[in-house]
Amino acid sequence: MSNKLNYKSGLLYLYWLMSGADGKKNFDPKDPEWRTMKLMRETEKISDDDFNSFINSDLGSSDDQLRVVIKILDKSSYKEKVRALAWMDLVMIADGDIHNKEYELYISVLKKFNINDEDVKKDKINLPKI
Image (cartoon, rainbow, N blue to C red; front, top):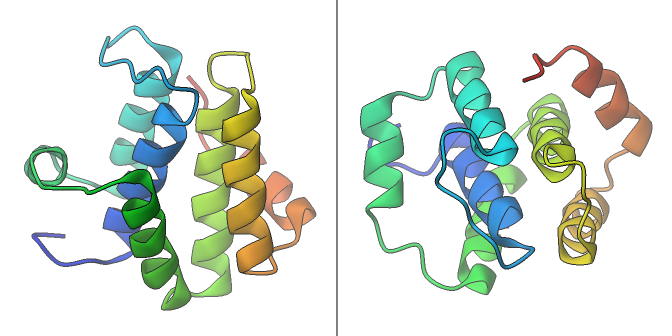
């Protein structure tokens, strides 16, 4: 990944947006959203160095972050977009409480790319769970 915007950095941006959408970003290793992100990093092979570089960079406002995600996913394949949304869905439901802002964010990205929600649900089945 290394300072270059790509699909993996897009996943981190989506995680960051989704985990903070309810106004409660939690860095506790026992937090279900944090554990889901760790699982995503392992599965998608996002290194500790890349993650640390990401969280220590200037991410800008939530609107800035969403613009970056849209830019990244615009260049991604349909399959990658579906996978990104499947991870987003897992983060959204990780704590068992879907906040309105989380759902709005998910739906806005889904609609922006005209992704079929059924494709996301099918892909999510194949992702590891915490």
